[in-house]
Length: 253
Image (cartoon, rainbow, N blue to C red; front, side, top):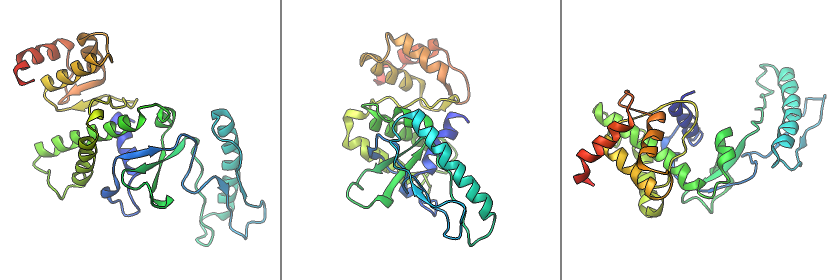
C-alpha cells in the first residue's frame, strides 16, 4: 500500500453509510486507549448454542495483552460465523482489529457516540499519544486534500460539486482558526513515495521554516529528507534543485 492509498483508507473510515464526504472533518479529540464504536464483546444470535455471549472487561491498553485477548475473541467469532454461514437470519459478526481508537470531529463534542469515528490503523494507533497528534493528523489529511485540489484543478475538474470540496473547506477553516498549527508537520505514512505538485520554491520555503523551528539540523538536511520521500509531478528531485529553486524565487517569500 502506498502513502496515498493508506490516507484514502483512513478517509474512508470517516464517511457515513452513504459514502458522504461531508462527514470528513478535522478532529478535535482522540481517545488514547483501545476503543471501538460498539464496545468489545461476543454477541452471537440467541439460536447459537455452542457458546454464550460475553463482554470483554480486560484492560486492553497493553499491546501484548490486547492482542492475546482479541485473538481468543476473534476465534469465537470465526466459529460463530462458520456456523452462521450465509444464512440471512444469522448475520456474521465482524472481527476485531487489534489497533482501534475513536476520534471526535470538530464541532461534534456534545453529541452522542454514533458520531464518533472509529479509526483502524496500526501506525496511527501507535502515534495517537503524541502531544501534537491532533494537529499533525489534521495536517496529514489537509495536505492530501490540497494535493487532490491541485490535481483536479489541472484536469479542470475542481468545483463545489467535487467530493473533496467541502472537506477541503472544513480543514482550511480549522487551520484558519488554529494558525499556530499551520506548520505542524504531517505524519509521513509509511509505505510509499508521496507525489506533490506544489512549486519547488514553496516546498523549500516550508522546509526552511521547519528547520528554523529546529525540526532539522540544517536546510540541506531538510531538503535531503524531503527528496527521499517525495517526487515532484512524478519525477525525482535532488536537494540541489530545491536549493536552486528557492534562491531563484526568494523574492516571493
